[in-house]
Image (tube, rainbow, N blue to C red):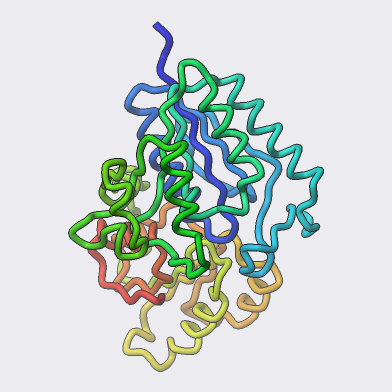
Length: 313
């Protein structure tokens, strides 16, 4: 009997949280006994733990300086017709070779509309395949509200046309989808809440006790406002009641090198500045206080670890 196969697609443009959350789900799916392909269209992230998932990297695309409408390639060149065509062909070829029984698309059509040039052809192809795969939208609990006329109607029409389910990665006792997408009632029958998504705590490395009691300052992926947070932490340390504790600052993988170098020049005794740590949940569990940008994945890790925390929007 052929092993059931699930095909995940994720495109992060700035913060890496989308990629990490999708990878968590893909790994758990593989651990449940399914064959799993994970297709990523963002810039590769060093140290991403994919387990038994078959990872496929498309030609990378990102956005320029937080402008999600200004897409560029890894060298900073504007996204052109040729690159759009080659990406679309890469994605369709992967789908044709793997022939999955299920497709999970992260964010779209609630977000990632910039990727319609490849996602709409993928959805059309999936719909015309026999047998047709189950098509699922995977979305976090709190969305960025769009004020553009007709945007909600477009989203609903795409869900109605192509998608069988919408998986909302949150707890409805905390936030329901209709709070940031008021028209969610029209697709209520397709919405399923999964709870918050994160790695199990026992997946973290075993502690050696070297980080007990430190102040941990983290900037998520590092692409947005992270230099300001880290520089503020350095300036705050001598004014803090925790000035005699060690402070560890995690810059994130997407902080530009020039900004990291600038911060490194300001490091004083008692402060450690690092680009990233694979054992972040363990550091959270052992720290005296966590100060962090309040991204989805970091908030989940804080809740699971139960550490004292200050979160910055």
